[in-house]
Amino acid sequence: MNTNAIRPKAAIRSLVVALAAGVLPVAAATTSADAASSCGIRWGSTPKSAAPMVAGPVTGVRAGRHACYDRLVIDLRGRAPGYSVRYVDAVRTEGAGTVVPLRGGARLQLVVKAPVTTATGQAAYRPANPREVVPVTGWTTFRQVANAGSFEGQTTFGVGVRARLPFRAFTIQDATGTRLVVDVAHRW
Image (cartoon, rainbow, N blue to C red; front, top):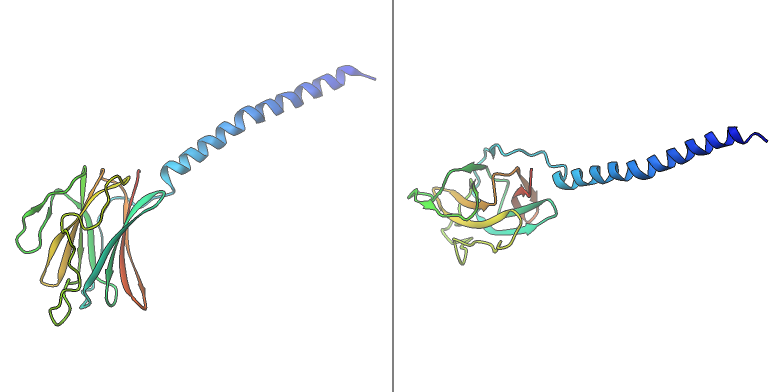
């Protein structure tokens, strides 16, 4: 039996196994880390908007924490509203135009083309604390959510965020009403 022919095959096999054991986990770990850091988010930070004005009022505001983003949901009665969501230097109150102080390194202004009162003038939404609409202390991205008021059929909210980060805005409509959803990523 020729042992010289077996040894090179065994050496090559050992080398392949060593490379596979040493290199592949590093590549897999790097890929997993990259996927975890970006979460596949490609939203950007440019303004998002939709045009229609609605008669149905804002009825509630809530927030949720997710693995890759913090979410703000504005509940409305009726069909999908027009909206504008953008980063601004300062969020201002509706009507008076005074600056709404917000914690965080950046400020998102959410303008919803819907009032907070019904057609008969009844309040459909009145936060207990307009400066802290929902509790977000200790969240990854959100620092503060404030109500900047409602005037002439539109309602403004300010969201203080950790930094200028990617976000998306969209509406969901079902039999119970419409929700304006704003997701702000934890990182780029």
